[in-house]
Length: 537
Image (tube, rainbow, N blue to C red; front, side, top):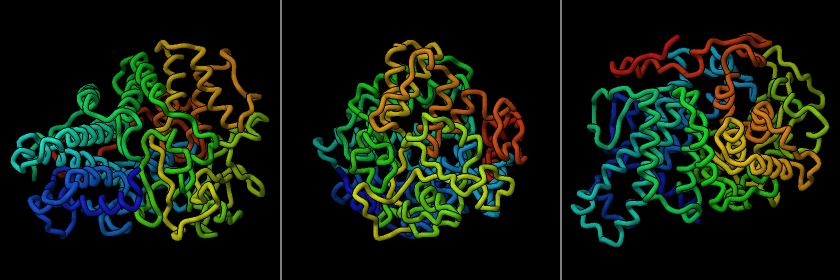
């Protein structure tokens, strides 16, 4: 396994070649770095191509090679432009799962009240960081063509491994375009064949973007490593299958096409790949979730390490932010006692998902309610609303990192329990498969949640789409799936389901359908005349 320490040393150094050669002003992702390492110097080093690949992965974790407070993308804040945090902001804080106390923080009030515009800095940060990943992946592909490898005299015995690296970079590009499709519905279209420098990429959207993502993954698949054969945190075939499953499960929302049978097939591929549920649910979200057994369930993580990969990413936010202003429960979360002073609460609508005797001993129920009013009438009052303790930097053996500000909890972007739930949903939506398998997968999740007890397992008659959307909330909250799930169930926009501050009112109101996707940032529109704003904005 590649240690986190080695990972960041490689990552911080290897990004230099990418930053010094890929400058696409039109994307508003201009890397800022003073290092002048030349390509020739870089590729003379041992493991140069693996180091370069680590730089592509690194964009998912770090915002620069010079510390967590800096950003390598011009004009973007280091916090709001971190990849995982961008997902958290737009997928979690826009829903019933979380309320952020400090609405003076730029952009967050508009996100959690569902009133964002193209001027929103959080939207801009997400757009820029995700497209930066596309740029970095493209640069890796440019630097590893057959012609480049021959020109540099790369030995034949290294070519096969570099081909695997290329497939990984291509898959990471597809992942980023998948996030662009999900969040924005469109993107500037750039590949390794695009010019380097100032130019205006054409826009790709809808079916064309969907098809490109699908094709990019399918092209990469044969050269990807077999599941669970690589170092921890590298992408293999199971990651490709999971992204395809997500793409197909959401195809009706994205392009109006039923692809549930394809989604179920991809879920089966992952399920048969040798992953297994972690016996203790909370171990999935601890500071040692890269070594405590959780890695047997986590299909693809975004790595964090409080000592070596410091960042203001999602797990740093959700450990520090979960400290309640009343509870002062920082010790439970492995952070400073006061944390961030009650930054995050949850809505009554989310609390209701855990109401009932069947959830009293459910290990997923980390809600703290004692001494608190369930309702939030004043967002800025951290004593209102319940809090919860899902992510903790306390390791499985009770120890802590020496740094208690930045999280060491790896963010589980994809994991097996999600795939089980997707299988069951795809089956219910007519994708085929086995009803018995669907029920069994749900009950495996529930048995784990109830520490081995089968008392709250379900029967086939309990397995409905209404059950699935609520069970996904219980199992996957704060993992950046909720907005996508609500959208797929026609519950994110409209008034069929409301929560506190949806639509900018305390009790929640309907929001228009155009808000199913976010606006294209104004700055990106002003730089690239080929981009168009999403309808309604």
